[in-house]
Length: 231
Image (cartoon, rainbow, N blue to C red; front, side, top):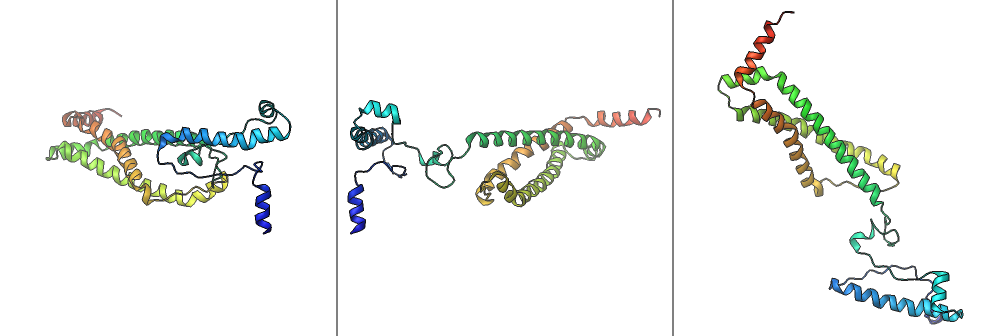
């Protein structure tokens, strides 16, 4: 009885309005109409009612206390873009996330450029090996596949070590940022495969194509001339 009486007493008290409500809308075009209806309800039962109690006009009440309107946010945007959604882990920092993505992409691109340079220099040191293979019957495709296969091993080992470091260092990173970031391997396996292919195309195929374009006679002639140079 006491609880019911308390509800009866406070049924018209709209002062405590800091609540969140999840609404499922079948027709997205009805959002504007729903916003207008809910705003009208709040204006009537809160702003206008409290202005009347205090003997003020609605305009004067809004000027003194500010206007009060319900805020609608998509569920997909509630955690990252809305700081007052009332949901767990609310108030994400979109700029911070974007900055981390840009830094990560720059580091990845610099690593790929470095890998291209290293792979090209390593292949040029082995130009004699590739030239001899071409002389004994190997095709450009065979040399290309050899370089791609060797690079795929290096890239696979690097990605495996990277994933292992993520699992080891993620708790310390969460402690530093005061967040609970999680990494799940299986849902992201497709993205990891795409990353592997992207690195392979950049760091293996480009140097391999450059090496296979070098003519065998020019490579052997260059090595012969270098041996004849006086010390």
